[in-house]
Length: 122
Image (tube, rainbow, N blue to C red; front, side, top):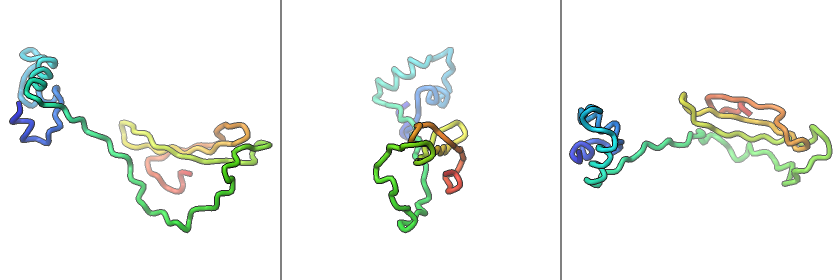
């Protein structure tokens, strides 16, 4: 087993390793493969999801002035809105979600989703 893992990229997990070696489930169970890997000092290395890239196309001159100056209290509805976005990993890839929140009611007044992080999203 160690030869197979050292020849590969080293990111085998016990299920894939059993399939790669050609061991059928009837011959050798998942826990036995895990035990054999542990006895030989082999550890699974999970694949890591990378954070999405933002394109780095922002210019410092395009950053607007801070109008709120950390004054997040509003006296009436629709006086102050804030916007934020986040990204979520889905089975189809990254999904970007933007929301606009009214500071008076603390409720979402609008939101949008997109597969790409563009200016139209916000």
